[in-house]
Structures are given as C-alpha cells and as structure tokens.
Image 1 (cartoon, rainbow, N blue to C red):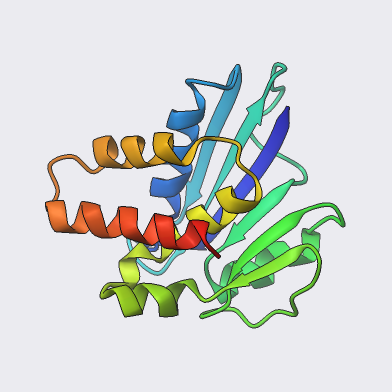
Image 2: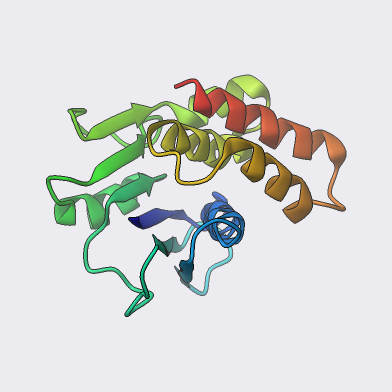
Length: 173
C-alpha cells in the first residue's frame, strides 16, 4: 500500500486539521505514516499545505515528489499544484472556489457552497475529506469520526457535530 496525499488551501481552511486527522487515524492501521505541514507566517489567508504519506514500506522522505491524490481547497493552491499533477493522480477540487475542468481524475466538489448550506463554511474541509475517502478508503470513516471527536474535544459540541455531518455529506459525493 502506498498513498501520497497532498492537502492544500489557504490558512484558516482546516487543511492541517484534516491532514493531521488522516495521519493520526492511519497510524493505527498503516505500518508507516508521515505528516509534513507547510504554512506561511500568516494565520489566515496564507498558503497552507500538507504532505501525508501512508505506506506498508519504509518512507524515505516525508516530502513526496508526486502524489496519488490531491485535495485542493483554494484557487491559489490549484494554480500552484495542479500543473504538477500526474496522469494517475486523483484531484478532489473545491469547485466553489476553483474553476478547473473536471475529468476522469479530477473530481469537483462544491464544498464551500455545501458547507454554507450546513450553516458554516468552516466545515468545507470535512466535506472534502469525506469526498476523498469515498473514492480512496485508506482509513475507515468510523475511525475518522472517532478521531475528529477526539481532536476537537473541548470545543463547542454543536461545531463538532457539524463537522461530522459535513464529513458524512462528503462521503456521499
């Protein structure tokens, strides 16, 4: 098993949260896992990305030179990373913020619009995570839900529940 995942967006979109969640959940079922975040000095609005590698073999570097999957949350990230997308790479794109042609390996999810319908655009990241795992079930959805509840423990319970609802919505897309 080898899954090289890039999650990219703008600061404040929860890119690092869902990347950390995938990595922490995968540690329980995947032999080797790396998590490598990259973000600017800005708290919100700056570039934010994360490499997560899941492998049944040792991982030589936490940075991937190409990816099996990209989750792209913002136009800036699409502009930066999609030109380097290989032909076998699945790209899950937040089409509410990015206008890219869809195709066999590019899936458009109106995540920000769907999150807005749920009442909070901040849960678009969980919609995107669900859409990704619906296509590549590298970890179990139940494990993600449990991990999300643990990662968000101490926060407003309604917000935690909203993130779980958003994740489940993404699984159906």
